Every structure is written in structure tokens, then in C-alpha cells.
Image 1: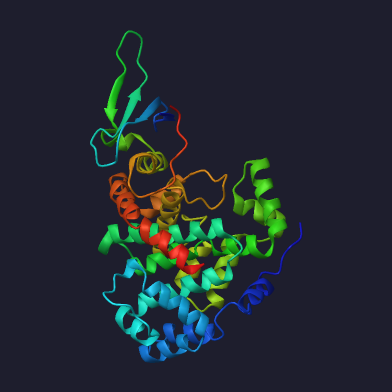
Image 2: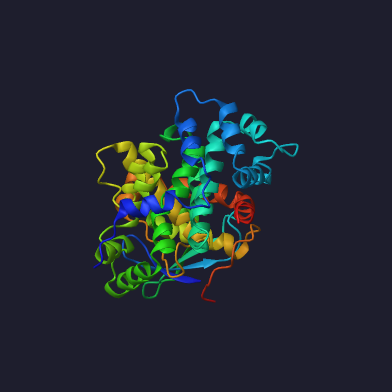
Length: 78
Length: 281
């Protein structure tokens, strides 16, 4: 899990839960407004709200954490 | 600041004993309008160490040849000029830069990432995937040269960049009076590689600046490939952090939806990348 900022400045948490080919392999959790439940969306649904660097960081971290390519695992918050 | 003489540094590299004795002749054949494959094969074969390295690369799993190739001439005919050009350039780069393994691995990874980026773009790309490999491989060649030949000054530049929070190429200019992009472009021209490749290397830290929109786009694509390599664990420097600038992204003309398939294609090539690193050492 890692904290990130959207292009509009909102703070979100990205949770890696599975490989890249899984539709919900990475989820983006939006901080809840008072009294509202936190919104959690699949990463691929919010691509346009993320910077290209962030998209690449998430995709590559997913691969390094769950993929079979033998890339060195990333350092992630747990 | 101790200004360095870039031209002298380039000449020192060109005359390295580890480079193929006839590198000028080999690149001259490759750049001729109607290159003779037989002549190219013979030119490579006259340098035994270089011929061996080329054959090891040719026989790697990446090229998927059905049988072992033991003749450089045959390899040239089987793989074609563009692939052989990449093999020759890769062997040249690796021979020159034995002392900077982290950067070398980053450069090879950028070559594979750039190939994935360009292949994804297809006809929308101004270069083909094999050219893309060369662009990615060579874009930081100046950085590799600095680290190999001027390690103290390079360490100062890294320290200055960290201390002042500036980009490495800016710190290089403050410490040495020149940056790795300028040096890389000069070296590539001295190796008689294409002028557009040199222009892209020279401008890869100022993607929006070149007048030529093709150079600008390729420089942007290189920045994307660089970020893919870094995010996948092939950094140019242990402390490097991904930071694709807005102007670089805009210049690349990619869409965000393009990034997942590009990463997928790069990941598929990781075994070949690792094999190439072993073979070139």
C-alpha cells in the first residue's frame, strides 16, 4: 500500500492486491469525507486522474510484487 | 568547476583497446546507402573477440533462431542489417562501459523498454522497434562514460544534484561544464551512428525544445521508456526516483491507456534482457 496524490490534488491510497491482469489487482482508495464511506475503485477506472509516472509506478510495482517475470520485488508499505 | 574537453574524452573512448579494431569501418558499412551484408559479416569476423560476442548475442533465446549459428556472415544474412546494427552497437557499448554495471543494465533495459514503446505505437511511431532499441540503449551513454572515465567528478555531480535538488544534467554542467546528453551525442556521431539519434540524445532532457517535432517526440518516448525501466527495478542510479515531466509526456504523444500494454510488452522481454546482460559480460 502506498499514499499518492491525484492530478487534482486529492490524497489517495493505492492497494496492490494481485497481478496486473486481474481487473481488481490494484485498487485506489479515496479518503472519505465526513460521514461518508471511503470510495474504492479499480486502478484502471481512474487512469485519467493519475499522472503517467504514478500509473507506471503502480503497474511496475504490481508486476514486481505478483508477476512471474523475476523482477526484483519493490519496497512497499504493508 | 573543472571544464572538461568533451572532444578529447570522445577520442579517448574511440581509441580504447577493447573496442573492435575496425569499428569505424563496420559503422561505415552499416551507414552506406546500399550496405553489403557479406562485407559487413567479414568486417565483424576479422575481430575474433568482437565476432564471438556478436555470435553469443545472435544465438541468445531472444532471436529465436532454430539452429546454432557459428558464422558471422550467416548471422548477418539471417537477422538483417537493423538487428545486426543493434548487436554491434550493444557489443560496442558493453565493451566500452565494463566499469558501470548498474548504468549499463539500465541502458539495456531502456533499449528493451523503448522497443516495447515503439512496437506498441506501430505506424504512429517515427522509428521502428529495432531503431527504438538503439535509441533507448544509447540515450544515457554519456552518463555511462562520465561514470567510467570521470568517477570523482560524477560523484560530485550526484552529490550536488541531491544537495541542491536539481537534475543531474544541471549538476553535471556546474561541475564539469558539460552534461551527459551533449557528451553522448558527440560520441554517437563519432561512432558514425545516425544524426537523428545524436539529436535525440542531445535533447532527451529538453523534449519540448527541439525544432524538429520528430526529434521531440522520440525524446519524449525515450523519457517514457526510461521511466518504465526505472519503475521495473533497473535504475540508472540507486537513488533515482521516477519523474516523467509533463513536457516529456506531452511530447511523446502517448495516451495513458497505452501504458498497461507497454509495461506488459516490456515485462515479456525481461528474460531476454537478463540473458543479454549475461552474454555481454
